[in-house]
Image (cartoon, rainbow, N blue to C red):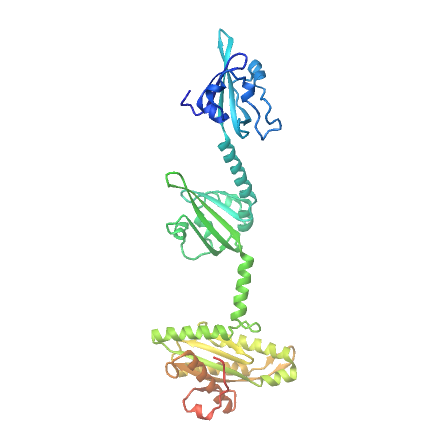
Length: 419
């Protein structure tokens, strides 16, 4: 009686308390000795969470008619006005089938009720969370997914249940990656990536993976939370694209051009390889703009970009610096002759007439070429020297290409450029 964790109260046939153990006295905030002789109705009252708070629980009726041995849940009140959730059982004590008294056993289920409430709350959050939730067992096998995951990933339960968590998270990655790789020994990690559903739809997700451990510290489950960030990712990519690409021709702009040129120059110096740079200026473009209009000029610039891309290698970079000025970065160019061959092909391509909305447009190209390390040591020098050579080509009658030579500095006036 003294060691029992459940409250135990003994009653006589009239409902008077004959014995209460310490657990019962503690639950009801009373003194065990003082409870002896009290009517059960005085100490067994509804708690503050009940409509009949403070009123006696009808135990006397139950003592006469039962039910017995049945768990009865109730909100029990304490002497200090507080209350708690409880389950009680009434057991009759009989001799020769005659009632001699009763025993009431009380269990405090406040913690259980709280846990049940938390479980209900967790279930509501799980089912209605806007973020996808995936639960996997200790071996990484998926055991449960919520509706938002199905919506985000487009996968039915049958397509993911029992599969490895890594298998559905890294469907769009080329390298073999696992959740353990991402966790790196910690119990929580977060990252963003592009994913792919089994139907092939790509979506961007912010993924958070947490480890759930049991009291001994062993891994019990993994929980992955996926937030669909596709719209933000696309907006970010759009901003990055607009900052690095020409909006008219979709070629790299000056910013991206200088970034790539600088990087390739550094790589070329380390590897002791050559880099060629062409500076291309269209001859006659202003006349097209003045006579046929800016729309025709834009069409010509777009067509020029496409023709330039067809004239160079896949490893080369065609960029538009602005206006009618274009550049071509040629990494690993073998020699002057190879650069000259490409320049000749470009001139021939751009000399062919352009269809400008039913009207014909004709331009040519003046091209300056500079090579590193033969004619420059830095990206800025490479660009400036190609610019000098391009102006020399214009002075030579246009529609031709020229290589940079130091003596051109004295004969060609180069306008200032922001490099």
